Image: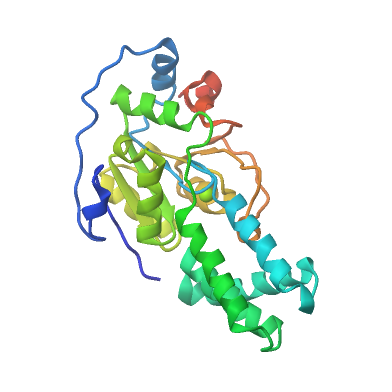
Length: 277
Ligand SMILES: [Mg+2]
């Protein structure tokens, strides 16, 4: 699979996919709160905190589900929403090796599935509506989830860690979402890959000059954000989101390098005490 890396600063609009630009940490200094101080001691060996983006920093999946609901209503003459959903999942899964993840891949699957599901009967006007539905996802608000901005800001201002966004999906779409979120300036770099494999996590560590046990990965998907990191010997914080894409679904399990929290702000809390050595 193709791998794309993009390191950026707050002026993402001008970045190219292979350009490497590292920004200095924020020069804005705030006194360390007790909470931050406690957290830093707990994670004393961690040098890089990597954050998943979709459904960790902002809501994404529920927007996909809204689109899918409207899509199912367009295909109502040919089947139930459950049948549409099952057929779409199968089309998406079949396309994944070549198209990967993201809105563009999803839109192609929506169109392809609409044609096959309707036995070629669907009219061009409906196809146009489906394309518009898919494209609407490229403009979803990317409003930071509760606690995200404050937590990332405090971690950035503590200057104790390098903060990285590590996400899969489409380069331009993910960069745009990060810009719209208003969070871009807090991160030292962004790495966008076509899939979050153990190889990609190993590369992430090499690129940042750290050992795997100096990485803490934070994300909502146990399959993509947690398991590969635990397998390699890194640390992970799982923040399950209210909705999960079927493709990411897997049983979670406990692990001595894993903490599960409900809100990202708990990253600054004593729950991470388990990582103390
Ligand atoms: Mg995610």
